[in-house]
Image (cartoon, rainbow, N blue to C red; front, side, top):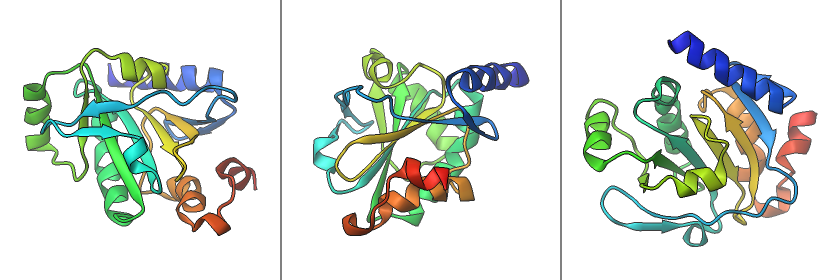
Length: 182
């Protein structure tokens, strides 16, 4: 079943993008697509919005506990969040699961970043094609740059190629997509 799920994700990703790395496909944020709202509470009830995160690079990771590729990529997200604690915020947006189930998952796989609750799935639907996991990388202005569809090694060199141009000071920033093409 795991092989089948990964195969389906990879085939779908290849259909939508020319650039595929391992089990993930990287696509630019669709040209002309508005930035959807993101106003969700975390497991402790604390509200989160993109507006409050301006000035930091944000990685939104859309996931569910039943998703094997989501679970597999979580340790690399933890490593990434610890690598740039002052400049990067990782937010795990959980798709329609109850807090008790998420907390059971977190007992086995502790995360160093907030888990946001998308109880009705509307935020996930606005941001993704509902392929899990999907991650969206936003620049310091809150503008989405790329989507990563499928399991991805966020601690690896490919992730560094995506993130480094965004982490640089504004005066030294280069388009992530231009950097990827070089």
